[in-house]
Each structure stands twice: as C-alpha cells, then as structure tokens.
Length: 111
Image (cartoon, rainbow, N blue to C red):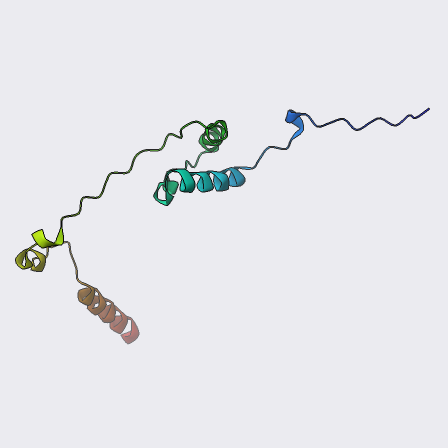
C-alpha cells in the first residue's frame, strides 16, 4: 500500500501574485505597443491603480489613458524673419546661459 499523497495540481489561488514592479513593466510594454511610448508617463503610482490597470490589460479592456493634445506647429514659411528675431523676456539664448554659467564659475573660483 502506497501512503504517499499524489501532488495536487496548483489552483489559480496558489499561483504567487505578480509584484507591482513586474506589473509596471508589463504595463509599459503594453502601452508602448498599443498606444505609443509617449503615454508611458500616465502609468499610475498607487498600488491599487496599478493593479486595476493591470487587470484591465489582462482582460483586454481599454486603459483609462488620456489623449495627449496634438502639438500645433506653424509651417516654417509663415514665420517671418522679424518675428523669429524677436525674443520674449522669458527666452534666454544658449550664449546668454553659457555666459551666466561662466560668470558663476568665475565667482566660485575667486572664493
């Protein structure tokens, strides 16, 4: 008589759950493939929402991703040279930034 118990097949509940980082990796792959890489930033941070999104992904449902606004770009022909030469007060050229950095480094080295 054999007293050993036969190994039982694992039930669905016995499968170890996937970790949150693994869920995020899978979500990144799925979103990149289905929606595009620019939508990856919309993956939620909270554990509950990541789990919800992962469940939706597994069920083949649409994820609650917000559409990105289309960037409006003016054709280059419509921008005149005068308009492009005008800079607003907020804009700083790369040369100005380089000069400011050089001044700061010079001050730091004096001390």
